Length: 323
Length: 254
Ligand SMILES: Cc1cc2nc3c(=O)[nH]c(=O)nc-3n(C[C@H](O)[C@H](O)[C@H](O)COP(=O)(O)OP(=O)(O)OC[C@H]3O[C@@H](n4cnc5c(N)ncnc54)[C@H](O)[C@@H]3O)c2cc1C
Ligand SMILES: Nc1ncnc2c1ncn2[C@@H]1O[C@H](COP(=O)(O)O)[C@@H](O)[C@H]1O
Image (cartoon, rainbow over all chains, first blue to last red; front, side, top):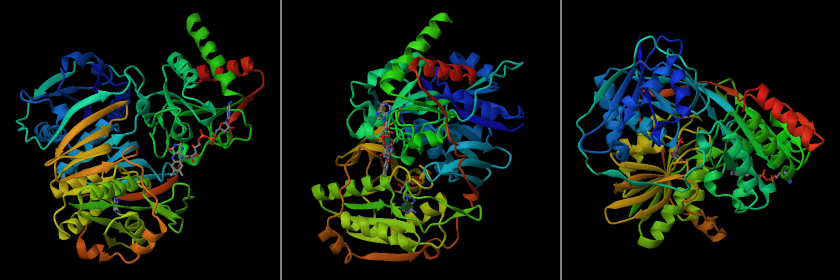
């Protein structure tokens, strides 16, 4: 049974929701020994959750002297050490900014190839599928190496619970690391506290130029809070100053892959689609029946977003209250 | 300061990509400087304006990629190195090996600036591998860069409304992204001047006689599945919304 290491990302003391799909991808046909890798945190706190998704082993990687999460190079060195110690050459994780950083530093350290943002992985062939040309094509790559390291695009693999017969085993690992101080994260600042993370959200509602003002984004925010969604924007909305760049979806913004993407007052430019095309369901709300967006989404509502969105919010609220 | 900027020449994202033989594409379409690399070039120029120094642009690409170097020279870079290849797609490990040797041959770098991602291959990895190869520290997704005596202090966009402040020893490798600066458009006199700036050409085989063994190879390309015409709802808002909510329920989206 081959062992697969899965990098676990923890935020506000909880494992990120998008991480479970990655565990499911690693479980494959149940022949793998899925080994969760937790940094700077207690494995015991997350054992039950991880067991539910089929994790057999949890490796808790910590250091007495330093916080690995603040030392990107040392964290990668610690991971390379753990891969040697526990004998695994397959490593996957979320292709999130943190995941990308760790996976690529680790692969570079080992001097082996790796691929990020994969939408499909084959552990036997060491092949991956990933988007190319801003989402216009899908390329299949083979990684020629005994190692197989890749980052998987959030939400591309559905999370499936598969409880174990036996308990997950916890092992602690404290590699000897020396802080050479060459690179250090001084601090991480959150620009807004409670909003749902755009790049890993499973539902997103976005506004375009038609939103007309920053103020009007509250219409989307209200709908988003009922849906548990994150709010995104088109470049036209960002360039007009209605939304910060951190909300931009598209070629020069974020790439997202939610289950449901609702585009409100967005015309459907190729550069916008480059960032959200792999969403499972795309719904567009646009008052122009000939809008390009309707040619490439699943469901469309022809109507004024200022009427449709608030009505949708109300309908969803009613539904929730009835449930 | 000796600043290296790695610049890639990529198909315009608005261009139609047609796949050839299942594992290649027609590269006769319009090409542009990789958008993220423009932030890297602009940053180099601003640093030079403050502190003086030399900006060397390094590009690995086919013959036509010389246009990317000219563009960077017209923006304000001093000279270029063109690593010439025949194939359209070169894997990251080979690219990094070539960039590393080209940079080392041109003298010790004080700073290496790159884009965080190329918009054609969407790798997001070259800065990390190059940093490791050059023995330099790396920060990417950089939206702010301050150079101190021995250190760079950067703000790195972590995406989920989080920004990391990172300090790293100089020299280092930086992956630039939108927000770092506003790239200038080259002015006509500078475009003319750029024609006289030197570009050194080297063939990939001369720099890297044998390709790295461990690398990624492309097996196939296919078009991303396109959606067809949407199912449309129109008419009374209340009815339309009800229909939409039904779809959401049916597909288990809410
Ligand atoms: C190099 C490059 C990179 C780019 N990167 C990005 C990127 O990352 N992300 C991005 O989004 N764009 C990007 N763009 C820009 C892109 O080409 C489009 O210009 C942009 O996406 C348009 O934004 P929009 O759809 O909001 O605005 P518009 O194209 O102006 O569309 C507005 C839409 O709203 C509809 N509308 C108007 N009023 C209402 C109403 N009351 N109710 C409902 N519908 C209404 C209209 O019918 C129209 O379809 C990039 C462009 C280039 C050249
Ligand atoms: N062929 C190339 N020539 C020069 N620079 C490159 C090349 N490929 C990648 N780069 C640099 O590496 C960055 C990240 O690219 P990538 O890892 O392909 O997403 C780009 O923004 C460029 O700065």
